[in-house]
Image 1 (cartoon, rainbow, N blue to C red):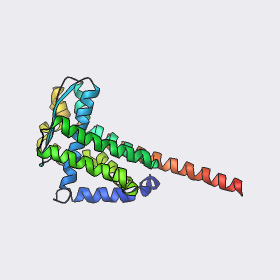
Image 2 (image 1 turned 90 degrees about the vertical axis):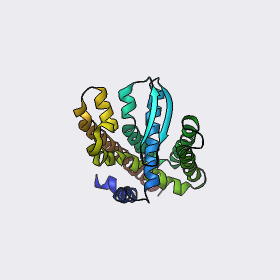
Image 3 (image 1 turned 120 degrees about the vertical axis):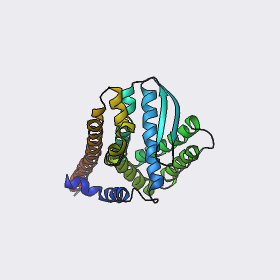
Image 4 (image 1 turned 180 degrees about the horizontal axis):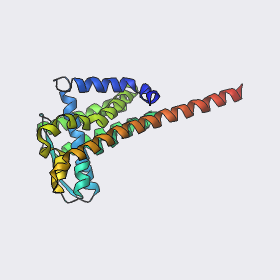
Length: 234
């Protein structure tokens, strides 16, 4: 485990620093970006389960919603945090293939722009924020390969850790308004809000660790193969 975390220590340290300063204005834009990805997860799950997305909104106070009709509600409700975690884990998983990671980063940038154009009022703050976020992902993905790799890995780690922040703060203050609380009410069991949130947090951490471990394993395999080829040439 230590060897796995060692390879990703810069991104992990940056993520921890960001979480420590989470309540400061310096991290505010990134916090809102996390909400954007969160709501995109709800929207994607709605469409994937046959529902219809009516509106997606995010606010500067880090609240947001994805209004939908139809679809499978438990999957839609879970897709905010769990979907963000899986996306983050996939960002980490593909770090062995920089080009694929850049394509994924660009894809999220295009989706951010597309969601803003399709589901938010033209000219609103969240419309402009969605466009700006999309372009800020597209620029390194297209023009700055080395920066793109660092940004993608850091974003991946932060997406995996995002549910922990909600578990630490919002759940204890107003559990009924969180995704876990909403899903628990859907099942007519409000007390399940805390177990649901805990399960989501554990899934997020596990997904991040497994993706990191896969990258380390592939790196060792590649190094062993390169060493074998070098010895054969000698």
